[in-house]
Amino acid sequence: MTKAPPAQRASLPLSTIFAFAATSLPIQAVTIAVAVYLPRHYASHLGVSLAAVGTAFFIVRMIDIPVDGLLGWVMDKTRTRWGRYRVWTLVGAPFLMAAMYWLFMPADGVGTTYLIFWLLVMYLGTSIISLSHAAWAATLAPAYNDRSRVFGIMTAVGVLGAATVLAIPIIAEARNMPDSGNVATMGWFILLLTPIAVGLVVWRTPERIAPEVPGHQFRLRDYWSLVSRPSMARILAADLCLALGPGWMSALYLFFFTDSRGFTTGQASILLAIYILAGFVGAPMAGRLAMMISKHRAVMVTTTGYSLILMSLMLIPKGSMLIAIGPMFLAGFLAAGFGVLTRAMTADIADEVRLEQGRERSGLLYAVTTMTSKIAGAFSIGLTFMVLEAVGYQAKEGVVNTPEAIRNLELAYLIGPIVFVMLGGACMIGYGLDARRHAEIRRLLDERDALYTETVTVETVATENAIIETVTVETAIVGRPNPGR
Image (cartoon, rainbow, N blue to C red):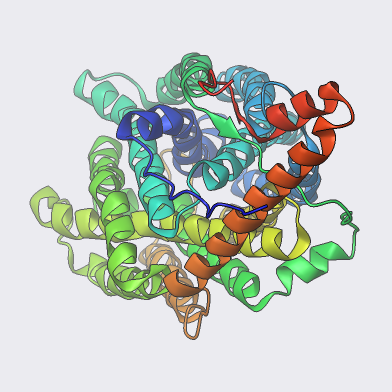
């Protein structure tokens, strides 16, 4: 019997990609609200000490980190008539919505225990949705360049969610409303947006469950085999640094731009909105750059440019919005490419692993990658807040900090991110899984998938019709009508 060569996969239509990217809206809105506004709200408006807030975030992140590995493993093993990652996207939404209500609309007098509990619920919801979304994207776009395109659009759409959150304090200040109500408004926005975005993704996006080769079962020691791969080890190190740098800045952003650069909270939010909105252009452009020079080289270009821009922030005259707009836009433009490129590169590694092991490991690989981001998140808030308190900086409203404390704030805001981002770019030197290598991997995968599907079908025709139906469901696109059936 002659086996036909695998068919060339067409690029995904933009309408499908934009519908799929809807989940990025609430996830990015949560990310910016939690990284920038929520810690300050608990420290300034609710009176929880800086050290207590930092400790709460650190504890939650440390608890949350191993959960991702378990979630990724379970997701990869999930097989239902509605799909694999689609089901988990639905599961994560209620957790996120509950956390938005209790975490962003707390009663007066809440303490560290309350903050820790609802942060755990929130991170569980965001982990489930983020992991399922990233792993689903890897199976949705199997081609090397198509992945850069999909992840770029996902990031660009997420910018809109983050920008809406940033608009809340800007509008509040323009209407002379108190800052204390901003966080509650953000919570309501995310709570209402989540079911709409998740519903759109589940309704409009197909999901393909790849066939599996029998014989390989995942064992605990296989975690090490995944993270010790040269390509994956580089991704993990880069992702840790590229999350820690901007995350460090996010935790200190409002303190830096108000106390050091002389902006109001509303003006600082406008500049942050410019930084975030620049990603709407920067994320797709990072994908385009990756198509021209490969993903790992694009990481090195964006990290170098970003670090150079950060060096110029201290040159901004105090309170000068016009001068601040330029460097903030450029920094946001370049930073948007970090996550786009590393997540697309992780999808390429997932193909390499599936070729070797015969099993889908996208969820597990993204879980491992997300662990590094969570470690960075734990240290970016926990460590920086502890450092600020140790050097004499005070966050409570009405307190006037000394020039020495302001100087320490400036050093903490700039030195750490520049060092970490440059280290992240350096991790890509000598990276080997480029477009040519990935094309060979995809060719072998497509040939094996076609052979596996054809062989099973021929063998089961002579035995039991029910098995044929099982194979058909397993290899068909789940969630959309199949014209061939």
